[in-house]
Length: 378
Image 1 (cartoon, one colour):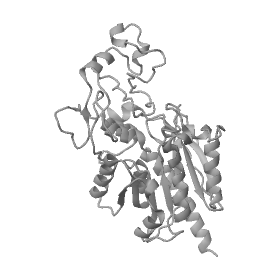
Image 2 (spheres, helix red, strand yellow):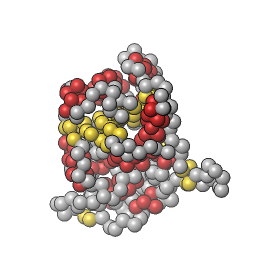
Image 3 (cartoon, one colour):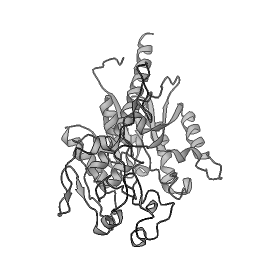
Image 4 (cartoon, rainbow, N blue to C red):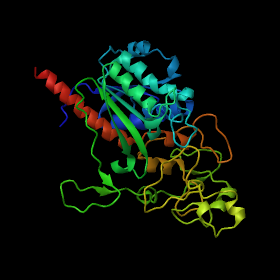
């Protein structure tokens, strides 16, 4: 059981995005002192939610590679070793299995090691890093498979931390989405952190037993009570429940069965299927009300299970585990348009599902409390 303290455990978030990780660790009991993020629309989202709950969290809108960790630590009134948690989800495109996978040859890949640069200065009691599974076998500069991950672990050990890592499926923690990401949690010796046990499983486990798990949450459980989304009228509603589907895409998704994708529907005319191949399993993909969603993606938006339209940002948020009082800012990109910075769908897809972040953060708190309790007993 967590001990109560007058002062909350303190955290700093790097690569904060729209705040999914920050929300989860806040729900767990951390006080987030600062969020560091470069994207202006994601920063708008962070500020909107911080202002709504009257938090004192500072949003640092800056390129992290140009940010001085000593200066940030001083601005936050901290000294080395006094921060409880440093966390972040660096950009994953360099390691993603659906991207070009340029690894460290991509400038975004090098951002992963900013976590080490800040950790070496702040000396936090715990570090949490989230990344795509592709990090585990991403090649280093010499082409060695898994070399990047090895460099990261070696770097953590080199500054006095003991890393533990695990591939986490969000669906196993109450999120209706089959999203697998690797989480790394590191602390100084001894690392008594243990990853939280799953609360949900693909198959319903009978049971009255001690370790009975709930089945995966489904898309239908979280979106079917929402009203019809608003059509495009020049304004974005506060709840981001806006339908941006162009007429051409309504035509193409018509006739695709629930849980299916357009390339599979060979009975539909070629004018509708066009140049799609059997490999295009996520393009013009309908979700199913009775299953968990595929991993939400930035480039392609999934379609509603039974309506001829794309899912709205609010429906994306429901599938990602955000509460309804969490708001998004920035544009909602039409499928034929381009937005320089992160539109609302991409903000959600890029973020850590808050329930997953909360579960891991609670386990980190338990580990920190054990160390604190042990230290005070001597």
